[in-house]
Image (tube, rainbow, N blue to C red; front, side, top):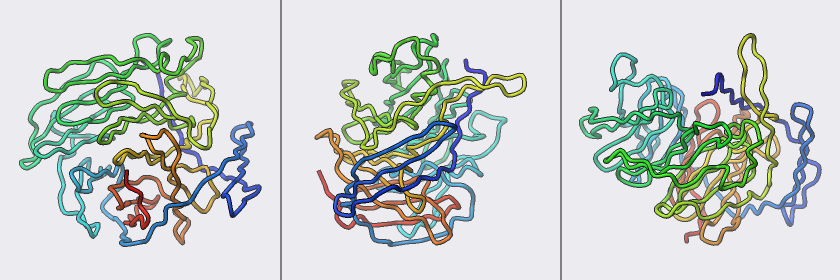
Length: 352
């Protein structure tokens, strides 16, 4: 087990060298921790958005917004609950309770999933996945894992994809399909096998840290710091990998000293891919490789294995930038740094 894990989101300042309006070809230079980065790629801003709602959320810090069965939910980090919103972005329901004395209480968590009658909460710190009755808001059962999981996503009913840490540092972490009902893991490969990473690479689990997300047909593992993502079939395992249009290079794993402790991290530490969603057969990735006054959501068609277009998300008048989002067909929910929540309509949304 790693001694200390440190993941930092650093404010970055991109310098726009040139921009061709017709082709949206852009060049970005960035210096991070002594290393010069240069990007040159084409974005097609072929998705336009119109603002429907703008609210200031004052009840805590929201994270991980997601649509389940057409309803918008998110985590309230302060209350350690999941909260539901109506179409006007008004909080209308809460589930869960904060505490650290009993198994049905939550200290903090980053992952949750809502079904018709149940909801799941995954506490990565305690290695426990808990299932609750959605209507009664009562704990039904739970499962302990014997390994740290870097990522998790629900693929329907009681089935999940996990990325459990390996016992061997040379294998980094695996991908498992997990059945909650029978408490059974099925291995579907390791990150080293899929990417053909030499076992000599140090701290690969930090370099290739990321998140699992799922849609109707696909499961995607996107990296926080690397310009590519992995695509899985919900039932058949790994299908293919695809580079992002920016092709951000792979960072280097390093060990830093903090007093008497070793800190495992990367150089650079910067997180480029902030959030992701799979809607229908498309991957949406929130990307901060842009000028300082906006971020972008880049869209990839998973059926065609290709980049499809981008959405430009401008900073607010007080310079707040997007940190997370949720998408449901043409509805786009964006959460900004100081908990402004906006609902947009993608006016030229392309369906599969």
